[in-house]
Length: 201
View 1 (cartoon, rainbow, N blue to C red):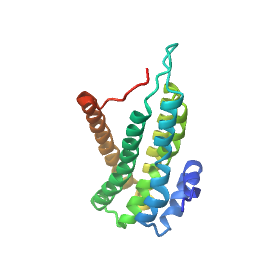
View 2 (cartoon, rainbow, N blue to C red; view 1 turned 180 degrees about the vertical axis):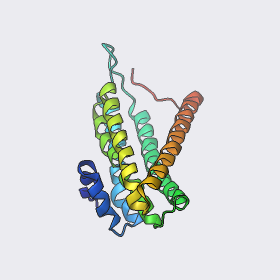
View 3 (tube, rainbow, N blue to C red; view 1 turned 90 degrees about the vertical axis):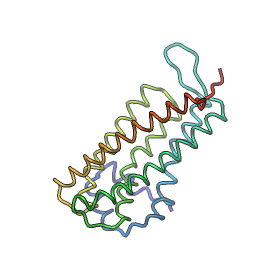
View 4 (cartoon, rainbow, N blue to C red; view 1 turned 120 degrees about the horizontal axis):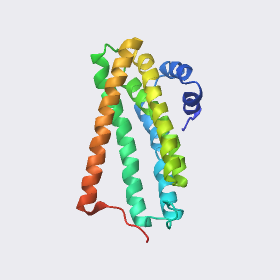
């Protein structure tokens, strides 16, 4: 069952919300089925609608739209990438936790991963109207809030000091940036092999 209480709390008062989350008995399957798999649909679904219905426009040029088939393929890959990223982050947290003296369960590691991604999940709604510069600005704000959630949540969820939490969060952020660059490189490579999107005009 989807519970948006934590999602709202992490946006309004994240520090207090992390304390509440840390006291819960988090379950990996429950988080995935009842939170991640549902919220991760927002961006791909909105993106499919936006790119096939209104499209995006640069300057005074005619709006560019994707074919439904191409948009569907991209949306599915987008969804799988987001879910995989959350799972990968959870595994990374579990692996790094011991390095920084943390003593917590893998369930809490996945809870941290799932809730850190909340702003990224929710901001996907703006893709209903793919206006590039607005989407970029709002996306950067959401990304910044996710980074803040990471730094504020790690010490609480991993039961470590703020100093160790800062170091662990910084290491995770660096690894995340490397993963992002790798993903962009793979995307460019796939386009080179003929997997580029198809446009209606």
